[in-house]
Amino acid sequence: MMAPMGASHPLDLLDRAIVGLDRALRTVAGVHAAHRASPAEAVPEADLDAGQREHAAALMRVNHVGEVCAQALYQGQALTARNDAVRASLEQAAQEEEDHLAWSADRIRELGGRPSLLNPLWYAGSLAMGMAAGALGDRWNLAFLAETERQVEEHLGGHLTRLAPQDARTRSVVEAMRADEARHRQTAVALGAAELPEPAKIAMRAVAKVMTAVAYRV
Ligand SMILES: [Fe+2]
Ligand SMILES: [Fe+2]
Image: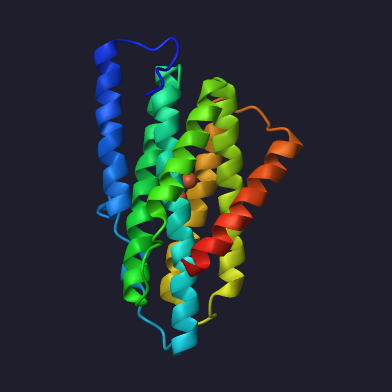
């Protein structure tokens, strides 16, 4: 494991590594419990035909993959952050990402779909990217986080136009996640995120496009 520079006590590091491993295993196994009840619980199931259900399940699979990546990203951030205050401030966001993970997994199941078979791969790739960003220092780590949240927010907005209009139950989950992602981005910016250079943003979009196309199917 890559040792963060300027890190505190070795036992703290070991602690963080164990918590991280536990989080990785739970994420990939899909056994996260939400801290907040899913917004879908308050919304009745709409009348959807088979195609609409399948489409909604596939879109929620894409969102679930996004949340698997968010877990890895926040974990990479926690492993590499130099500043304890930064790490603590992002814990709230990381906990909300766990809710998203559980909510989207629940909704996939309700719609009769299944999570992506490639989740271990998505997790590992995102953890590597998160740690690479972290190696550049907190400002860039936060920049990567802020830009990710911004792109996820946009992406969820796109899903709201693609879901069946009457599918209020799925929409309630997507809307709540989008509102959280906007706040996560603001948190990262408030903590001092740099603005990523345009080519980095374009590269991130390209990677996200491939991921979403694959996750829609697999
Ligand atoms: Fe999220
Ligand atoms: Fe987020």
